[in-house]
Length: 189
Ligand SMILES: CC(C)(COP(=O)(O)OP(=O)(O)OC[C@H]1O[C@@H](n2cnc3c(N)ncnc32)[C@H](O)[C@@H]1OP(=O)(O)O)[C@@H](O)C(=O)NCCC(=O)NCCS
Image (cartoon, rainbow, N blue to C red; front, side, top):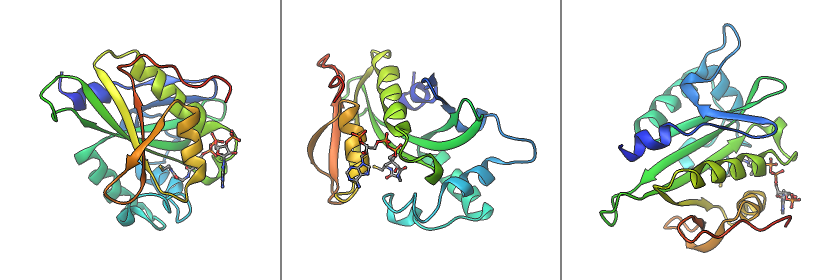
């Protein structure tokens, strides 16, 4: 299976969240995916994301953003189970061709809407993703770049078992979780 197709099958649940490919996510009547994206992407939630993604979104900008993401990545909708409400997005890229092996390395981006911050949901989200990746033997690693001032995201990744491994070309801190070594995330840290 093509790595992109492999990560498109990513779907999991945690205590409070359901996470699955965004086009299949259940939406309230009369609400489009672009409407949801426009709510989740604000100047505050995009501040730590790539430069061209930053700022506030109306439905048209959100619809264009959805089309761009679909061309290059797999995006998962994060839905809070109890409220059945969309609360965030996970953006996954596959990078598997570097050494000719069929192992898949995943690059991770994610965000939660402002009202979902500070409740441990990001840790639950990323830990659930790690668990799903561990269940797929072809996935070798997950990595994500974090801005040096984004201490909350660095903390989320470390709590989910990632380690700082260097800097990205953009001067961000690169965090990686190597799934080939069988190491477990830090317990209760
Ligand atoms: C980063 C983000 C995902 C965090 O979501 P969250 O649900 O609030 O995160 P959690 O509650 O699971 O955990 C945050 C951790 O960081 C800590 N933290 C939060 N703000 C912090 C700060 N300014 N300095 C240091 N630690 C901080 C929290 O205390 C918590 O750690 P703890 O459980 O040990 O106390 C969310 O703020 C977000 O979507 N931001 C915008 C997009 C973004 O930055 N995405 C990541 C790009 S790499």
